[in-house]
Image (cartoon, rainbow, N blue to C red; front, side):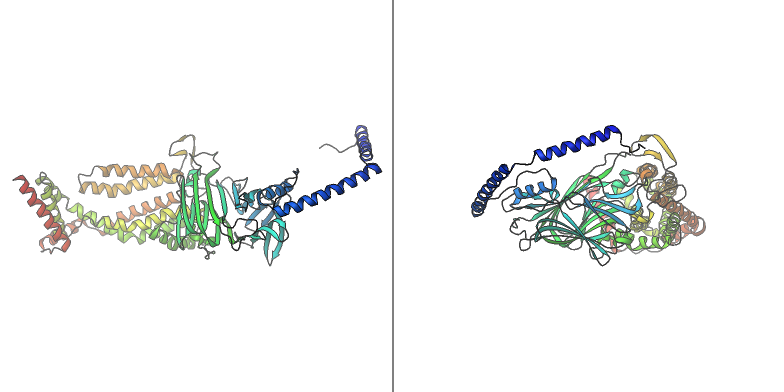
Length: 619
């Protein structure tokens, strides 16, 4: 480090500067005669200015201050020229609000939040999680003045004032004309909460604003990347909003989109596991919403996922603004968002629509939370999957029983197909008659699969949106909410990535054997369906390629689920179902008189009519 020493040259330099300053000071002093002349001239100028101001006041002419260099004083010029008034100058800078969970910086210029940082979370590369940082966000109010000019709050300087309200921190940001005329942003932060109160109000500005035209609130934000796979994170980053009471909707997650809605209660700019939400106690009459996708491909250099934009009108009351709102900067976690029932912010979590979302939110989420209270997170996935599959085993039994019955009837179906191969209508009639006599329905194998769909879809949505899995490790997977890596590739394969994940490989092998046991058997009993074999190979390939960048927790679930299903089917085949016994039961049932139900009778009559019409055409 350089030492601070004064040498001879420095001393001489300081002396010279001091002498020059003294000389300049005395040289700049006016003589008595000059002082007298300046005084008379000043009085004359002040008298002229007073006359001019009186005349201009009668004509309602605005006086614009002379240009000055200081930024905060330029605000007065800008506002004076924009709306016939001048705000009190303020200085640039920021004010900090923070608790144990959240760190915020609010800038004097614009009065808006310029930094929002999570204090208890980090990104995949151990960097603090920022929702706002480096000018990725802009909150601006646009006003029209009575002389038809435009005023933007992003260009104003606000004067900060901190005070306490019990344990709460209150920050008042005022852009002032005077002590009784101002525009105020009021922030109130509570201990141990991600949500803070936010109010926008004006006082004494009703003669300035054109209240016939509502002010416009504009909120722009670019979502900052937090996850290892930017494409996977982008898939679950969306603009969601609540409107018209209890309706919740969202913009597209994969492409650019825009929408206009009415009576909007809250807006959520979700960045997968974290959200920036603006909620209002007075619903916005309308809202113009836009999202732009910023991710073109999987790249480590990509920093942002989506560009969100919202424009809403703010109506005046007696010529003034008065809106009570809330900001939420925090995790997209049900345990946190469910505390804010006033707004129903938990509805912003993408659990799925209809019954799928209901099962996910009210069954799987609390059940998994219970398991993780005493089990490691990865092991809890295994246990939950086993319990779900065992609970669904009766449905699996019904499905396999139907397949076994179809297999027993295969020789007779083949005989009908060969005997009536030139008469499709007659062949169908005979086949349906055989099914009716044997008490077998070809649809009975599909119904169990349909019954399982809500469970499978709910779990498919659960794992990518479960905040509990974030950065939780299991076996070789460092983060169950992101992909696992056993090998880094020196190149990138389209749709696959630049790495090899093991859990998708295991899941693909398990689903292949499962398809062999189910689809393979169906191919034997249902000839004429060549696409089934293609599907048997396509499903594992799809799993292998596209799940390489998915959450390893989801791949772990599919692996365990298919493995348990295979074991259940083997147990049913070897220890529960007896094909010889099933064959004897079918033969016995065929001997019994079978009464047709209405549907079967109608189908038989329709087929007979079609057969008669075909014969008439042939004649």
